[in-house]
Length: 218
Length: 218
Image (cartoon, rainbow over all chains, first blue to last red; front, top):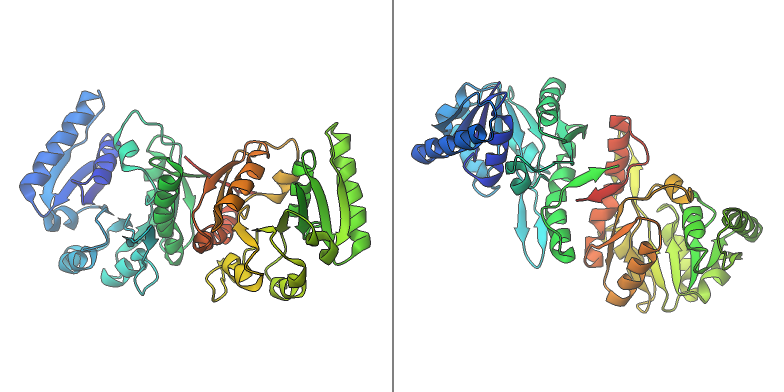
């Protein structure tokens, strides 16, 4: 598959690029094309240095990068997400869009601040063309551990979405990453629950002196 | 310590009685005193049959049971909780009240339906005397596994509360149960997060063919 990563130069984007590069074509998207290309080269180097196959990691502008792919990973901060998607809307057609976006604010602790639609995922669905299949997943995976190919990712990934085929594709992509276990979280209307886990986990980590918390349901 | 269990004849009450009976005096509370005494005798028999110490498990009415204890475990359904607590209010003084209560409804899936205070725990705090220390915990522990003394409870228990000493006591009580790990979830205003995990876990279990799901943060 062709997988574009919006926010691909960020820390969580790096992890997905490295983990999926052995099986898929990865496109690192950025407003700054030079930075995208440079980052893509760096990621390719990392994959090859581990003796792994690298199908190809390339750098692109956001517009060109997402136009002709199967999957778009949306790993951008919530702040700025709405104008970005409105601008990129003409370049979306029928991709699967995986949202990792969590609207949250830090006051005395981190708080989930969903938009009026109820969650970032539902807002994304409202903005993008109806033919796009929005999936909500990976909010609670540590960027540091994902990018560390030696790290054992024994976590659960709850996946929400309204298109069963798209959800199945994201479940398969999840299975490809080490020990991650995909779980069906139901429709996109349940995304608020997995999005709101992120500030909860950050607060829990800070309060209890822990780090990079993920979740396992057992 | 003296620990009263409101809803002590129910399945989750059984687990706490069995797990804490070796170190604490347990009082099983019920509207029906005969049923309370009969249940207490049954639990004592279970503890002794495992060759464990049993400090004493007795049965009582709700009113008499909670009046003179250190800790009250509130393991009753949300439906009926408010009138029950209003009726019992004169018997509360400065106990630690551990709320396991989750307001939820089943529509096409389970949904968290908090009262206007924001969570069951905050509503309980509003109803009971100010001197009572309300702690929110144990919402996501499987009743079946808790009551099975052979079961390895390798789960995390997030504990919320505004009184640090009371929270510390509940953390110690948690440590006494097998492999349970207590985590500080902050003030009682964060209780909605751990309460809302319960319907989420039930939905997840149903959707994915799993059973008795607990949570581990790692």
